[in-house]
Image (tube, rainbow over all chains, first blue to last red):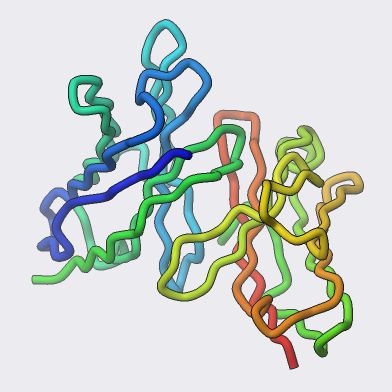
Length: 120
Length: 111
């Protein structure tokens, strides 16, 4: 059973960078059968898939069109975790952010969620 | 605006059945058998209820079922129970570099 543990700040100032980390237990970030995703939820936008990383002999990074110019997802094999960096945030980026494991839009393990508020 | 279209609300009395639709295009729902459904209670992580259109993960009651016809997928909840009251989201694998698309969510109310 895969378990995901999120960490990161809950308050970010406008124009700054939102950074979150998701630590994996029960699987490997470099597993060739897994994918590691970031998803956010807000009252105004519902659930929104942001992006993912996965390893298939090399690393792949896929991003939603809505955030691709501002989002970087990284994998850290030494710590068995992956991370999200969202640049130039605005109040519109205020949401609960989740990390999740799964492929083809099917996410069977989720982190606990982190409420991130963008405010000065 | 979400890529997949869901009705904003649905309701039913205990014991009844209710279906929730999820409409996409031939580039997502209609083009792949990778539709999933999630149950989301406020303050909790979403829970996978259906994957690959009609498969149930271990532990999900068989009161929950999924189907697909053309570009529209459906989630049916039979024998409604009070604990089924939640927000339900659909998702689909997508082509054209969209990767994953989600619906806007349907609030299911058990009357």
